[in-house]
Length: 359
Image (cartoon, helix red, strand yellow):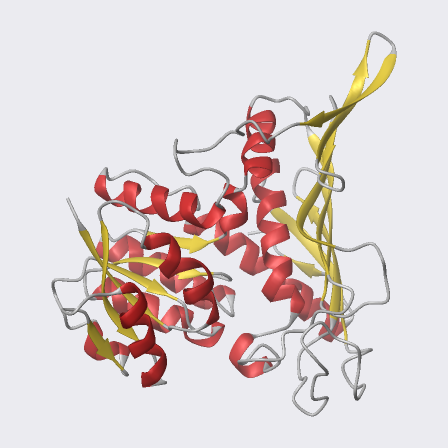
C-alpha cells in the first residue's frame, strides 16, 4: 500500500525534516507541493517529487485532489489550525508541524475536526524519537524513576536568533523561543512524566536583548525593528498532583548553560538528565550511583532500520499508524496541553498574575 502525500509549506522545516524523511519511507510518495512562493514548491517537486507531481500556490486547490491521502502542514504557526482543519475536512490525515497552534482554542478545533472526520492528526515533536529520549521514556514507563515530582524543560540558546522567515513576527508565530523551541522541551518533559494535568502557571517573557543593534548572533545581527517576539521566557508550572516543572527558553541570553530539547527529571526512585549525554542517578545499598547510558550500539528505537535519525523514525511511525490504523506516538490531546501551558505563560507575563488551568 502506498500513501500519497501533499506538502503544504515548502520552507525550512519541510526541506530540513519532512521531505527528506518521507523520501526514505517505504509506502510513502509525495505527489503535491504547495507554497505561496511558487519557486519553493517547484524546487521541492524537483528534489522530492517526480514528473507527475503537481505544484500549487493555493493550498485549497491542492486539497481538492481526492487522490491525496495525507497532508503535512509546514507553514507558519498562524495557519496551522486553518490548514489542518481544512485538510481533515477534505478527507486527509494530517501531520502538523509544531507547535500545534497559536492558541488553545485553535488546537481544540483541530482535535474536534479529527474526531468529526475520523482522520488522524499528529504534531511534529520529533525529539521524542531520539535514541536518548526513547530510552528514557522506557525507563519512565517502567517506573524506573518512581513518581516524578520535579522537572526542568530546557531550551536555551546563548545567541542563536533565527533571522529568516517570520520567526520574529509575533502575529505570524504567536511568540518567540518559548513557542518555537520551548515547545519541544515541554513536550518531552510532559511525555516522560505522563502528566497532562496542569493546575496553574506563572511566567515571564522577556524583551531584554531584542532591541540591540549589530548584536552577536549565530545567523548574523537581527533587525530590532522586526524583533516583535520575546528573546527569552521562563515559566513555572504546577500540576494537579503537586508536581513542579520549570520551563526555560531563549534565543538570546547571557548564559553558558545552553542546550535544546532537554529534560531533567527528579523522582522518588531516581533521577535523569540529558546534560552530559543521558544520565540516570539514584541510590542503592546505602550508596548513590550515576549511570551513563551508552546509545552508540543501538538505542531503543520504535522501528528497526530507522537508526538514530529522529525525523525518519517520526515519519516511519506516522505512515505506519495510518496503514495499520493505530494511534500515532504524538497524540493531539497531548500537544493541546503543551499549547495550553505555553499560552498561559504568555498570559501570565502580560498580566503579572498566575493563570489557572484546572477544568
